[in-house]
Image (cartoon, rainbow, N blue to C red; front, side):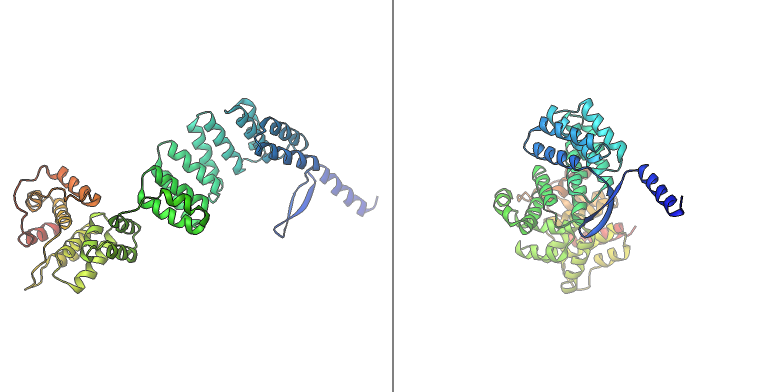
Length: 389
C-alpha cells in the first residue's frame, strides 16, 4: 500500500472516531462545527413553532424527535426540558433528566441555566431558581435575558437593593438596552422610587419612542427639590445647579443640601464656589465645615469656621442649622448641639432631606429644650475647637 493511501486511510479512521465536522459561515466568518442532520433541524424548527403557539405537547414530541437525530445538542435537550416543565407547570423528573443531559454535553451552556431557573420558579423553588440564574449571569454577564432574570429572582428573594445594583451595573455597560431600562423602570415603580422612575422613563422614551404613551402615563411628576436631590445623588454638579435654579434654591442651600445628603465632594465644590463670591454666606460655611470634617480635612474645617474680620455672617437656613448641629454631635458636643438646635421642628414642607436629618438628630440628642435658636456666631468658636480635636 502506498504512503498516500496509508495517510488517507488514517485520516478516514480518525474522522470515523469523532463527529464529522462542517464549515458554516456566520456573519461572514467561517466556523467549524458538528455536522447536524437535516431531520434534526426540521424537527427542532417545528418544535420551536409549536412552543411559540403554546402547543406544548406537540413541542415535546418534536424536540424528542430532534434529540434522536442529534443526541449531542445541549440546545435541543434544554428546549425539551423547558417544554416539559411548561406543560406540567412544575419541575418533573423528565424535565430534570433533559436538563441533566444538556449539562453533561456542555456545562457552560448559558441558556440551560436560565431554563432551569424558570423551571425551578414554576415549582416555587426560589433558592434553586436564584442559584441557576446566578450561574447564567456568571457564564454570560452581558446577556440581557440572564441579567433580567437574575434581577427578578433577587427581588423575589427580598433583595431589591441587590437587584437594583445588578441592573444599574448592566446599564453602565449596555446603556442602549431597552429591555434593561424597562426592567429598571418597573423595579423603580414597585419600590416607589420616583427619581429612578423618571430617569428610566426619560431614557426609555428616547431609545424607544413608541413606548412614550405607555410610560408617560405612569411616571410621577417630581417636585422641583426632588430633581435637585436626584442630581445630587448622581454626583453631577452641573445638573444639580441647573435643577437648583429651576427650584429657586439658592446656591448656598444647594451646598447645604448636598452635605445633608452625604454627597461630600459635590457639597464641598459648591460651598467653595459660593464662598469665593460671598465669604459672608453662613450656610456655605456650614456646608464646607461639615463636608470637610467628613472627609477628614481638618485644615479646611478651620478655614470654614475662621470668620473673616469685619464680615457679618448671613443667617443660616433651618437645614444649615441641622447640618451644623450634626457636625457638633460628631465631636460629642451634644450640649452645644442641643442649644444650637433649640426648638427646631418640622418646617412644614415635608422636605424628606430636612425631616430625615431632623429625626436623626432628635434620636441622637433626645427632645430639644424649648426656646429660641442660639446664635451661630456665638457657637462658631466652640464648633471650630470641637471639629479640630
